[in-house]
Image 1 (cartoon, rainbow, N blue to C red):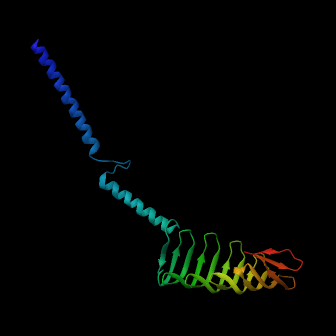
Image 2 (cartoon, helix red, strand yellow; image 1 turned 45 degrees about the vertical axis):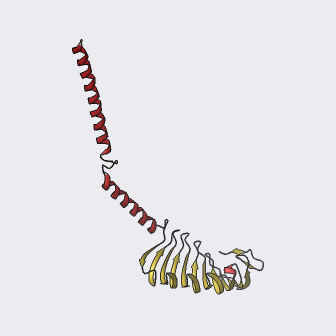
Image 3 (cartoon, rainbow, N blue to C red; image 1 turned 60 degrees about the horizontal axis):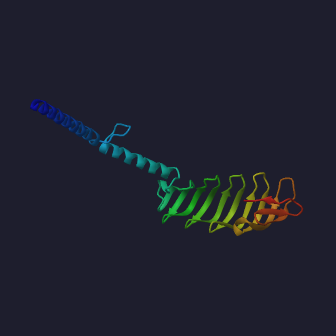
Amino acid sequence: MMTQLQNRHNFIDFRLLLSAAIFAAVLVFSGCATTDSTGQTGAGQAKTDATRTDAAARSRSLTGGADNACIQGDCDNGEGTYLYANGDKYTGHFKNQKRDGAGLFEYVNGDRFTGNFSSDQKQGHGEYRFKNGDIFSGEFKDSRREGSGSYKFADGPIFEGEFTNDGADGKGSLKTTGQAERSCVIKVRSVYCDQEAPRPTN
């Protein structure tokens, strides 16, 4: 009877030891290293994640994402190219980190301005090409079309005169091939000539 009890006790001890060994092995193998789907572990994975983050940040800067970026030249005091977060791009002269001097501003919507800047503002003579093909050439003051200039429609007619209210209003004459020059006005971004349908401007 004693032999049977001792054998049974030894069997239970063996089962407990075996369970403890299996549990310890599971802990060792699962806790030693964390591996991702690429097979990298520990510091190697951290380095890969950092590289991906840096690449994403560079991509955002160069494609007009979250950050503005000077992508070429000297955008502090010199000539350079600056890409804005919304996709607009300026190429030209800078002074104290502002657009200053001759430059080209390309809007993400397809419009383009070529002319002079002062302290980030369009100033003096410039040409603004709209994406629909219309062109304004004339004077700018604080980035607004103010003063003498011409507005050429994509289909040919040209309005020449004085512009106010950022080009929304003005007074001058309209020239059309094959027709006599006539006096016209601009009101709320439309050219009005006597007995003619108004021509919308930008």
